[in-house]
Amino acid sequence: ETGVTQTPRHLVMGMTNKKSLKCEQHLGHNAMYWYKQSAKKPLELMFVYSLEERVENNSVPSRFSPECPNSSHLFLHLHTLQPEDSALYLCASSPDTGTVSYGYTFGSGTRLTVV
Amino acid sequence: GESVGLHLPTLSVQEGDNSIINCAYSNSASDYFIWYKQESGKGPQFIIDIRSNMDKRQGQRVTVLLNKTVKHLSLQIAATQPGDSAVYFCAGEGPGRRALTFGSGTRLQVQP
Image (tube, rainbow over all chains, first blue to last red; front, side, top):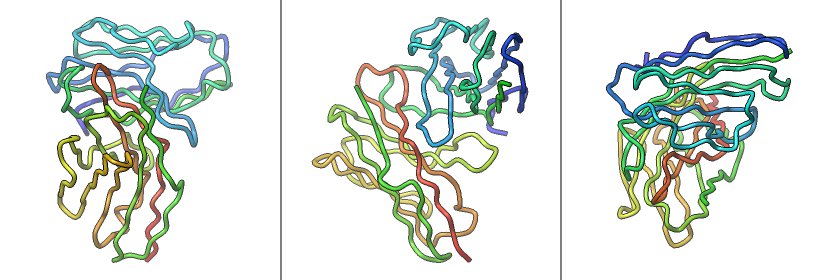
């Protein structure tokens, strides 16, 4: 375990379903991130939270809705997704944002399949 | 903005040989770089990082080289082992950016 836990590990959902991905970290980090990893493509930044405040939304469709109730938990709420949204969704945390030198700690990801 | 990319999608090496994985970046203002390793079914794991005021940094069996003139960095793995088989990503961060930008990855295959 890296200290960042994502649940569920796998999720299959229909295009009309509503589901949520959960991320939890107990590293004392102040920043949390959602990335999307599709096959043969770079990791795509989706959202950045710093101290529970969303500081970056990287032009993500509104069918993805993040929530950060506290600095230890991050959710990604999903509704009316498309098949092309199938991917590995990775959560990461870091001590802070906007710092020259820091490192991310990643979770193992949620493998999402939209049918 | 920043973009990072890798030269080769797949690199195959013999066990015991040295591996070199390359990465190019576009933003000359980028001042921090990280290499990550991602094994199947896992999230990326930190390997080594380097700041722009350095040319070289060494870890255990790994070395990162940074050439700011041509905006290129490389990851060298000494005496490559089967456990090194994974996808390797470089990532960069520039001033004012709030998050890392990742390249598309190179798959390292270690042949016994």
